[in-house]
Image (cartoon, rainbow, N blue to C red; front, side):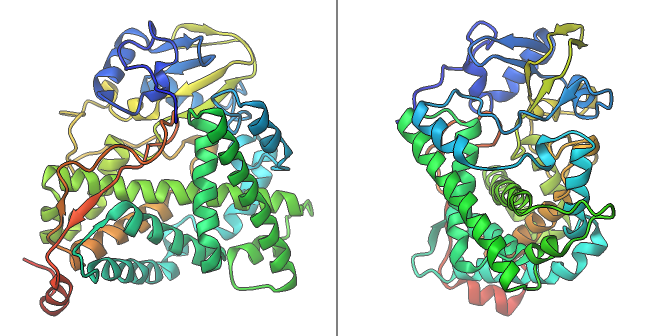
Length: 433
């Protein structure tokens, strides 16, 4: 069983409790930190916590070299010997998210040479993503029971399927990718007992070995997919990626997209169903992109991120030693008073103006998959509201499905019911007006 995380009061006086900053009354917590403790040291986690938009933006956009992503994939929690031995044995090479220029430039150039980062590049995939979303929604609606869990039955399978087609993951490999991605985020940023750490480390190792297998298979049997494209990619300076580097990049893309895309869709649905806004989107599908953006602002998949200092520096008036790790509270930055939003703690999908989010990175490390994630989430909402316009969320959906995570939003169960036979009626009459 996962050990209990201390109840959130003032985390400055309760070392270690900031680990659970994404749970409970997080909005009041973030207000308190921004006002009274914008930068402070947590001795239990040995992290310097940063809560305000201004300082987080400064760190993410830093070009002076004072801050580095080098320890992004170093676990937040100390690993037990058995788990550490497994994790250390994985020959994962630091790639885009955990490197500085010029190494970062080399990997990002190879990644974005194939990965679609613009609307024009994504356009050929749009109809494919939309078709997958409709198919997945119809599969849910066809259930004779008229009930299901949207997180496990819709958002996660859809996100995995779309990503698998684009990258080149066969259907039989999607479960390995999904499980390994969850294991990776739990191991790195979760708070687990030793036995669960070891199980998660084995899951990460399995994902790594699977990535190597995919690379080797595409070398022998090229296909029209991103894996083959990365293998064929020729760097302008001739410094082409090695087998292990391509596998590492593949593993990073898989683990980040498998988690964030599904979480964005399910979290948006959670807020739409709990606020009654789902029906509004049924009648006004043009509001769907705004609902996705509001979720990225109000309750993002990525609630924190990590950096480390390369030298002694000052941040927000606080002196930071060289070689320390920073926990950037991205979810706090999104509702900072700096933005001047009315009722920033309220989920409002019709909010007229939403500030630029830091939840998908900034500066040279801005997420290259940001547009893809938004498009997939919008397609998922469009399909579900069309196929199942009258969903009812169970009044007591239960607790989170995984352990407390300092960096990633913990998935929620989304048990829903609907009138059986609704699918045929919707497909015959079209979108309800």
